[in-house]
Image (cartoon, rainbow, N blue to C red; front, side):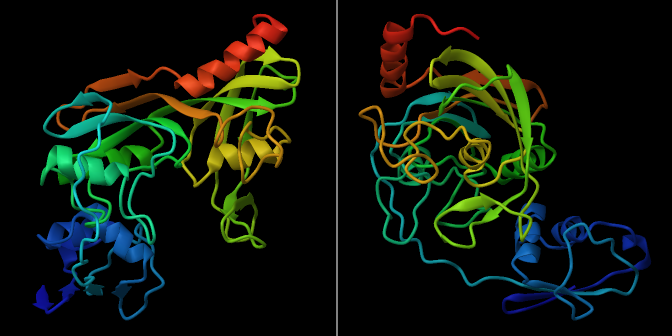
Length: 316
């Protein structure tokens, strides 16, 4: 292997035959982890025998010439801010936080302050995984601004890689509570429909075969309130806006959803009533399964109280 400025040039040997491309790069370079290699491959920054059209699952052959283009160091525009955090669990590897409604997870153009990352930088200092870059330190997965609930944060690169692999293998438990429009006739069901960018609105996602990726959401009814239904949704995959898109697709959009639901809202709320209430994963250090729960936020609970006063205790 040779390194020139921001490039790695690697020639595969006989003993490398059959290795996955992302794992091979991570093994050969002390600068690039397997997770970061997978991201570089996805971004077209890795070529095999001069071809960028490769998958992270590509199997190495003896004599393959691999070139990795490393990105220039990012300038960090996010700063540590003393923002209170509702920390559910923390150790040297992982932190589980209960994110409030209205908080953005990580900085983005036009929104560099007040995010979960700003708060994590203050709380953790330099003890956050660096795999996702300086604007998303420690962030392994995300939930939308107006979705509340549990997120796992990686404090070490080892933890980041482990959690990322568990997410890819669909072994992380992620259960959400949501209030949707209309009465779901069945008690439970599954939506298996690909999600990609909405061709007519760049801010939205849609169920689409064109550039869509497989997305699976399992749901079950918790309570029924006339024209509203309280459900639990379990993610098998984790696409952007997945629950919001899937429930809208089957004609049961989330109450309060400004993108995928009715424009006129029946309650005085800001954003969709969606809460990531249960999160479970195997600890990156010792493999033990850990599961965490977070109660519904006050705004969500008040809407349910109003519905129960009107309809009585909802029937599942």
